[in-house]
Length: 595
Ligand code: ASP
Image (cartoon, rainbow, N blue to C red):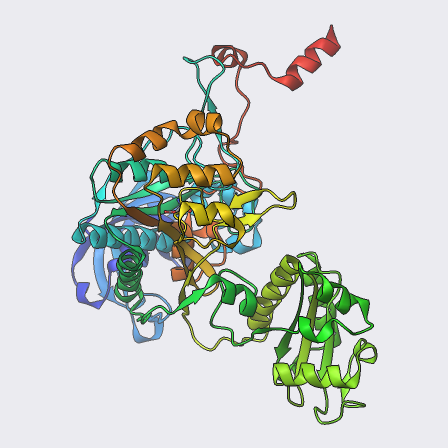
């Protein structure tokens, strides 16, 4: 039906006859001449109808916004005065000689050009209209190109694209499962995969050697701004490769992608161990574009009278840390400091102490701060020396349980970086390595930091002896403070897998019931293997510079994990429930109350 996309037209088409199909972006009547901006996925071009072509002109007069048209016409140069430099096709216009209205459109619920003034809920309710906008068209076209580039890279490196089931058993990745009741198996449920983890490991046992899949994953967790209950992973697994091999091949993939798609050379990715990341940057995904660092001062605070500092300093699980903002004395207003105090409150910090350094040589009068009076001069001096403060600097402090300080000051570091635009470069990739195997819950039980199939870097005996100290063979790829992907070398030995399950408090009966198939598979010649998964949505977000994950997904869920367009999740009728052997508690209560 068409010869060209609207957005493709330029001066090289002048004098050519073209047929276009698209939507009416705008229609203007200029003293007897009708201008229609016709839009398709490639862009917009101006079409002109003049009264000489009577029939077409009459039809063009009827046209309204979002009507679907087929237009035939001749491409011609615009007058110098009307060339539109802001439009890709702005040098030309199409002189319309034929017009067919393929479909009419009612007035849309929001003008597509004024999307930003309507709430996101409206945009999501009429997502099919929102997606017509150039920005969304570009974002999804870019996403398609990225997945093709990824497939090409992995295909060239011998990876096989293999699909794994969506209706499956629980795969623990630390979130709640989405469950699907079974009609044919009364009282039993499938779980949607939190990741294809176990299947990809089984594919290694089967000898496929290099697997990948662009896979949907489902995690029922409390949603944060950049999370979706269903999201897409570039899931990768290999056999006979250690962490060096896996990191090198996947780093190569991301580098190729940035090079080919954005002409960005990411260079070689530096490495940092987890302990350093937490100590210096307060995060396991440090944003290395920001030059600020956390400096621990616990040892300086044990003897001070100020309980806010000495309490955590004496507590083995406490942390006392300083964060220096060079020039912060001038750059930050009182109001900003108050806002930052509220900000760290989100992470559980009870306050945010600070010292403004007016004169670093005068411990008596050179420091300005509500807390400085609680600190003896030698401690003041020791702090300034430790953080290498000079006149004009501002030092923030965190003192609390270690995890609160780490999270609060880690987040403050990023916020300061953003607010004061401290970025030293555009892209800062990083591998974080040497993660602990486990983290301790408040009740003393252990939880896998990655997932329970991650191999420790020690023997099963050493692991059992001191699980809290054990490190894993896991690695995360971080870009600009976002975790792009994470993975590990896996356990391929049955006894090691059992040792990990035991530490996690999974009894042998439960091990058999939940993971019997994996433990069996590990008995029959499982090769050494490992892999990694990247979050595709987040990768696209970073590459396109968008701030919302919903802007890179065609049909995303809202923050409350619902689809406002289809109204999912929705109620189901009684017959369907009966077939699934399900009785709803709320309904039952209501029915009883009515009796
Ligand atoms: N399955 C892991 C995840 O979803 C990634 C991996 O270990 O390959 O985070």
